[in-house]
Length: 149
Ligand code: AMP
Ligand code: ZN
Image 1 (cartoon, rainbow, N blue to C red):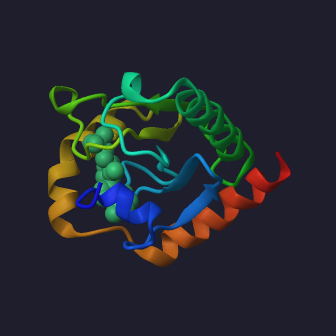
Image 2: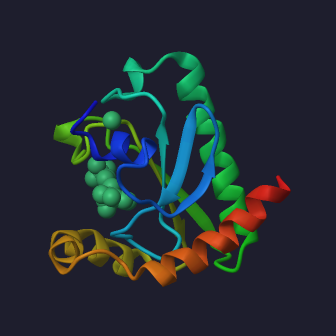
Image 3: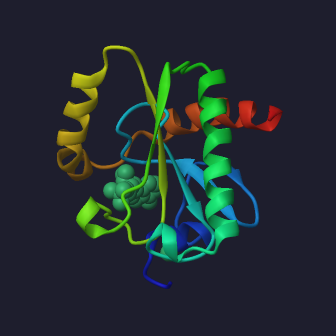
């Protein structure tokens, strides 16, 4: 879809710090991360909601998200857990109308900090994207682990 920012990332009309890509899926760093290591996965097909996707794309998205999570566990971030999160429609706070899955590192005792980051998100959007060198450094770490899996 021509005015979709995630389609523009797939078509290289917008930049992204990519950690993985194949014919059906792309995984890249969220530029307004809720925390270090916040990765987004998108199918290379423009659909707004999960149930609109052909099963092969949906299954590949979930399988790749699981590989990304494994890479997060293995890389320097060493989370204790991850969130797999899909805001599947505008009423569920979906802000980009192209299916995407968030993979977010979590740590023991980080709930207050995590909720604060969620509430602060509109302010972070106004402040502009995360430092790209920081994202590149994290992405290189995650990519290295993905290449092993
Ligand atoms: P959602 O609120 O579930 O629709 O998530 C959309 C996500 O896309 C948010 O976490 C944004 O920070 C992220 N985002 C928006 N634009 C970009 C972009 N150009 N590159 C990477 N992530 C983006
Ligand atoms: Zn799209």
